[in-house]
Image (tube, rainbow, N blue to C red; front, side, top):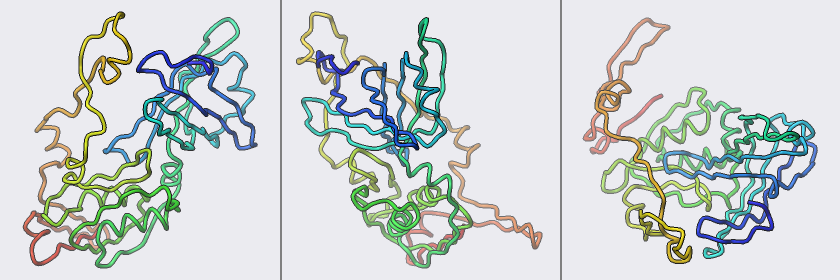
Length: 289
């Protein structure tokens, strides 16, 4: 996917910017040396991630002094969309380094949103009193991760309040804890916190299924004779993940409604029972972590 290659089929994207920036301010344009780039956004993941496969004939790996403080500036668009993905990622890992030719090498850069790195570097100890989960999530994003308002998308309102004591958790652990206990006015539990091209989103399942589909894809076999313009919405293959497994869910506490709490200082223990009626009833559930 070199810079001067035109858009020839439905799988091609226009890579406008693909700059690698190190801590010294050096910039390398990767558009003519990358072989493959993958971007992932998932409603089950708090941040966007990705990989980029580099075919390096100039020993960028050694001359660029990789140390974990590199950034990847990306601007990718599809001509039919006219809405580019523009974002700066943090390169957190390199891997798969091997000879690629007589004088070159191949390696992979792994990148993610910078907030994920910040989250792993920080531990939060604080208390929330009678707070809605959406307000807890907003506080973590703005005050703990210092996320700019422009990067915060829709944070949907929630019902009920919680008392939460945070014992040294990282910010995204708090966010996932709050999201897993969120419910809407209909008392339905199912909220998702994730990042997409428009920023961080916190939405209920009911809201997501009511949204207009962005695109309808067809699973069909393509032939060489087909015009790419006529099959731009078709897919080559797909994989079904997350299949049903009762035993695995039981092992991981997926069906548990009882929590065993152990006090190692007083050498005591107690059981706490949880149910949907308790949390959504007249007496709002109080949770302590």
